[in-house]
Structure formats: structure tokens, C-alpha cells
Image (tube, rainbow, N blue to C red):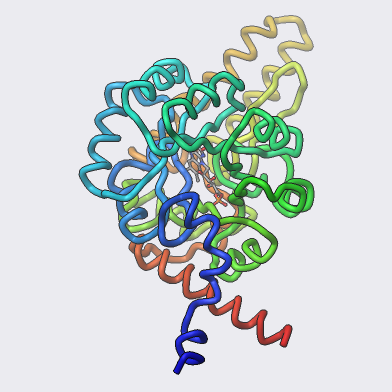
Length: 345
Ligand SMILES: Cc1cc2nc3c(=O)[nH]c(=O)nc-3n(C[C@H](O)[C@H](O)[C@H](O)COP(=O)(O)O)c2cc1C
């Protein structure tokens, strides 16, 4: 009798326990914050399904973000995080807000936060998670006192670093065991999530797969484009000249992407001929994608909008309710752990 009870216990319990405890949710499966996509409805759906949702702060005006936090709280009684982008113009106001609106979890993204900002966020009572896309950023965030790291490889959608998750796992995950590390970038299946857990991750973060969930507010054309895309269609924005630095973003190749390449090449030629100043050229580069994610996600402009997506888009083939995605991921994790156990027996 005792034996049966023991074998019925999911193997994943052991591997989920640290992430589960840290996040206060059933499955340490995070739906990463996605600007324009991660609204209260999606975040609450993830939390109510046992995962962990992250509300996107993006550059949302602070009054609206406060309303979104309140709305999310109405839709779920589970904990969720708010994602703050350190390079967003609204960031200062967001940092002031966290003093008024107590949040259980704050995720710093964009560039990396200053030590005093991590200290200030922790002083509000929040658990602080920080993105790391290189070993040196991870080291710094660890030193600054982050409670957990989200280790994101360059396969991911949105703003990215330049190092793949496979290398980051060896550089960072294998090195640190004193704080939870959640891994992101290129993960779309529970089978892969199981191996991340076996390697020591406390949980996984997915974005691309959730962007096409039933509850995602993204335009039908945006979702349809994702379903038809292959892994190789999710490309990082190129930079052609060090005089014109470009923040790398992984998105699906479209007309806007091709126009951006052309714009950069034109500007470089004009710079070489001394026809324009570097500041002007840089402004043109920065202007190009302004508002482009909203155009794609909300307006469904798949030609000129920014279709931020990770390479995992190649593994996404249907629109599913969030609860189904999470249940499927969980079942696959369990199945894979059982297979590994059998293989080792
Ligand atoms: C459309 C889109 C928008 C994103 N916006 C943000 C954001 O505002 N803040 C953030 O920290 N990460 C953002 N990300 C990254 C995700 O939170 C997540 O880490 C990433 O998608 C995981 O990799 P995957 O795309 O392979 O699933 C975005 C990703 C996508 C696809």
C-alpha cells in the first residue's frame, strides 16, 4: 500500500520544489513578460493554471500599469511578477510606484538595474529577479543581491543578448547553486524543460509559445504568422557598422526587417560620404522600430510591425488555451523524467 502511494508521486515534485517554493505556484513554468501581450488577462490565466505570470511594465504610463496590477489582482489571487524595463522612459515612475504598490515579485529587464535599485525593490518586500544574458551580468546581479536569475539565451524572442542558452547553462547554471536560476530561450516543450530541471534549473520561462495562447490579446494575423513560421525565420536584427549601434531584437523576418537593413546601409554610405552626422544617423536607426511592436501585436501589421519571436516559434503549431499548454508541459516533464529514470536503472 505504502509502495503504491510512493510510486504515484510525480517525479517532477523533486525537481519543481525549489522553483515552486520561490515562486509560490504549482508549476515553476513562467510565462515571460511580453510588452503589449502580457496583459492582466494572460497573466491571470497563467497563474490560475498553476504557472507563474509576469505583467509587462514596458513603457506603460504608470497610472495604467497601476490599473493593470489592480485588474490582475481581481482576476487571480495567485502571486505574479511585474517586469520593469530599466531603459524605458517610464522606468523612473515605475520605480516610484513600487514604493506605493507593494508587489510580491519584481523582474528587472532591459539593461541591468543598479545595485541601489535592487536594494530599493527588495526593501519593498518584493522578491527580485534579474535577467542575465552573459556570465558577467549574472555575476553582477548575484553580487547586487538578486533573489533569482532568469538566464536567457539568444534564441529567445524580444531583446536579446548574444550568447546561446547552451553556453549560458555551462557558464552560469553549472556555477551557481545558491540562488534559483530560471532558464529561458528556445524552450517550447516539457521534454526540454525536464532536461533543464535535471541540469539544475529551478524552472523554465517561455514567451513565444504563450504569445499565441488563446488568452493572448495578440492580433489574429500576428498569431497566424507565428504558426506558419519556422525556427530560422526568427532572426536577430543586424548591425552593419559600429558607428550605428543596434540593440539586438529577435523577431520574425518581414518587410520591416528588410527595410531596416536597407536603411542602415543607406545611412552608413551617407556617413562615409560625410553627408550626415552620426547623431542624426543614430536617431534614424532608433526611430525606425518605435511603436513597431504595438503595430504588430495590436494592429496586426505583419509587414511593418515588429514580430518579436524566439526560434522556438518553429515548435509552435497551434493556438491553445494557457491551461492546456501548462498541463501539456507538465505532463511532458513527468514523462521525460520517467524515461530518464528508466534509462538510468
Ligand atoms: C513578443 C515578445 C515580447 C517580449 N517582451 C518582453 C518584455 O517586455 N520584457 C522582457 O523581460 N522580456 C520580453 N520578452 C522575452 C520573454 O519574456 C521571454 O523571456 C522569451 O520569450 C523566452 O524565450 P522564447 O521566446 O524562446 O520563449 C518578449 C518576448 C516576446 C516573444
